[in-house]
Amino acid sequence: MRTRLLGLLLMVGVFAAGCGGGDSARTLAIADIGWTENTAVSGLTKVLLEEELGYEQVTIRTSALGSVFEDTANGDLDAFQDVWLPNQRDLLGGVEDDVEPLDPWYEGQTRQGIGVPSYMDITSIDQLDESGVDQILGIEPSSVVMKIVSEEVIPQYGLHQKLVEAHTEGMLAEVDNRYSNHEDFAFLAWAPHWMNQRYDFRYLEDPEDAFGGLNDPAEVLTIVNEDLPEDDPVAYAFMDALALNEEQLNDLE
Image (cartoon, rainbow, N blue to C red; front, side, top):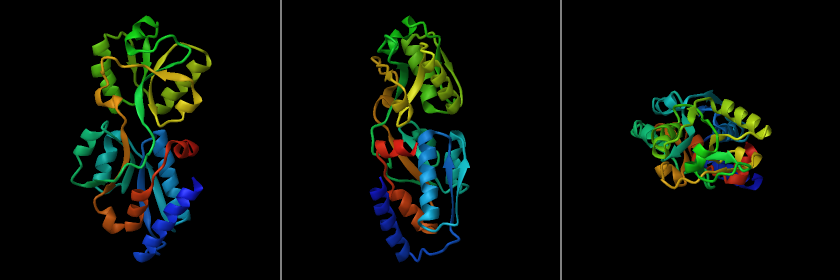
């Protein structure tokens, strides 16, 4: 990973020199909505821009999925680095005239769905009602996957489980507790995320394709305010060139 980042910094450093990018007073505001991969990539961006490219301050602002697109569009934020497509296509569509999407920075394979511990004897969503599980541990209600599970998955399979809303950190704490106690439970799972390395679990099959497009691999990318390429070409070039694979992202998380 170090070799790859050095190459990235060298490339951007050459670009910065060509732009006269020696201004030590440069600042940047980027978002963190609390999702693990967002925290990791925003933290990496802050460290490299400040310590290697001479930025005075890169501010990571705690944000919410429901407002982060608009905040980037109106210039309150310069960038948001955790856009999942197609999940957030509607949110992006609402601001598409005021932001620029960059190429996907995540080079690994994404996955989303309902997970259960591997010690449970089920493999498909249509077996959930037979499992004795009475809840599906979920995340923030603003997440598109929560809407899909509530409006598509549960009705199509006639599930009786309650979809539980929670902050992602709270959901993960509950997963850890139940897994440690060898309890039967179901939860929303996705990759990339460290949960895939920490816990032995399976993604339940979706024979009715209730998740629709979310069953296909997603793209994870950055959006920047439309003025950033002109106002800060160095930060723009850095984020446009940044790319991480699964192993590299796991190391950061």
